[in-house]
Length: 526
Image (tube, rainbow, N blue to C red):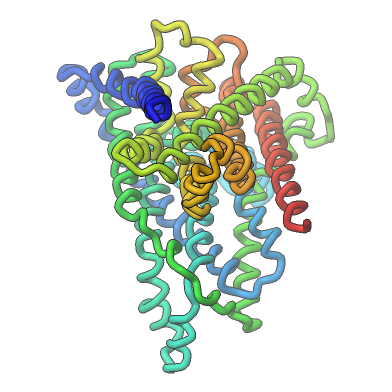
């Protein structure tokens, strides 16, 4: 018994120290860089006020549009007898497989000053500026909002609708009296989550913002381009505010409606008119998602966009000669290591919080979900400040650590929820039979949650492949991740090469997601 308690104490101490060093200490070190003089210098500058207004207006506009479109798409998938739902589901989440800057790049290829549709339709000007940022941000955030609404609609109980139908209550009043109250918490959580995603992202405004300055691009220019970490820390503190609010709202709304028991599924609308409207909406959304991606795919094989549109493989050869192949392998290595480390750590933390009660478990759960309140650009700057004089700085390990922490919360919650559904008496039965807990975990629990482990691995890998926020601060001179080549090629006006890099990232992530889908499909057939 003493040995077990000693082992548990050691594990608790190690995990506490790890999170203190990887999360709490870096953020505190960044905040300590803020001085009264530095704070005043930033907030009283002309750029800061303009950036705050631009960030709020673009983020609010894009968030509202993204939520409306995502809710309509989720209703089409879950509430109508629409055909081809599997295909539409796949199209709606494709934007999650490429960096945010690639979405903006695709819009530039379509609607920029020399864009394909701009020249074809004879439109003057381009998409740069406010509406460009909004459009790119909607594309970037839509899949997340869609999955949130789709997930909650899957678990709505249809008994209330059956009763309302028997009583003759019109569909409109059913929506306002049953559906809307059920979705209210998810809508609030989704609003703050999407707003935080957009306001802290700098890929879209950097590529398509034109003369519009946002807080994220201002922080990027100060901290990355000018190495002014004091000013970057002040802006980073402001970017933490919406993220912390979103985190608190999510914590308050953690008891969502889908945790209840579902007596029967909500009946799908089968009318031809409803099905036609759903099909038209899903086709239009799919076109809006796929066209920008197809535009930069086409650009890769054009001799000189937009002057010479003849087919060529020259840009692929040129990009590979500039090291794209090596950078791609670097990213695969970074992503695989971050996925292995993150999945293992997230499983351990989820097991300790979901299967073992106590004060430490509650505290560990809180710190485990705290990472979702830290934007990537803020995490990157805090790591630069905290780790700059340590051996880990400028190595592969700091990239792996940053990605593991940056994307930790969602996989952790996946496993936390899954382990909560596994029989809670397994460990007690094993103890009665004289079986060690580690054998119960490895031989019984892990096989039961293996598909969640696959999803966790994929989440870490995909996001590590495409992130440019934290790694833009931390990437060593060599080996660099491939996502940073998009910025590099765009700055050199090598648009075709930047397009090819985006395509490579999409293909690698698509292959991994497809591989996991095949594994699940085969398991379901057995």
